[in-house]
Amino acid sequence: DAKTTQPTSMDCAEGRAANLPCNHSTISGNEYVYWYRQIHSQGPQYIIHGLKNNETNEMASLIITEDRKSSTLILPHATLRDTAVYYCIVREYNFNKFYFGSGTKLNVKP
Amino acid sequence: DVKVTQSSRYLVKRTGEKVFLECVQDMDHENMFWYRQDPGLGLRLIYFSYDVKMKEKGDIPEGYSVSREKKERFSLILESASTNQTSMYLCASGGQGHTEAFFGQGTRLTVV
Image (cartoon, rainbow over all chains, first blue to last red; front, side):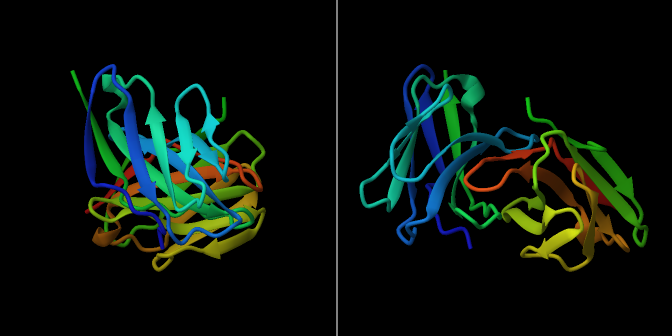
């Protein structure tokens, strides 16, 4: 049970910010939001995760709404190499499994 | 850098063969996972292990078994390979609590 809803695909112009939304309306208090991406024929790559505060690292920013029912992954300056499938995952703190949904195919165009 | 290494990138096996897919991680992680990925079905969890000799079934364990004799190594076993097990197999490892899991590059298995 993936527990998340994401658009099937999105386009973004190279150099612009890519904003990828995710709905997780049934998230509970101890569940974290994780983002991964998968470039064709490679294993998924970890991007970022958070509980309720916004998070930023060298790859991306994660914005979680106050009610925690949705989040947005922001790639500030998308490049062609960011073309990938992006997965939003909800994971319980003490629950070890990661369940992947269908993800969003991000196409970065020149 | 965390490294999760899968023994083969591509593998071709015959129907009925016993197949071993090996995965090794170098970060002393407690948790290790095996997924398969198929077009239109996404990543599905087969088995995971939270400690040496400990395992739990995921969503699709039928036709598979696993072995974790050492902390760094997690093996996926297809006792009698069938054509419907042709897939991309992905291994991952992760620590306890709210930490990320790291994935290997995958093994594309073809059963003929």
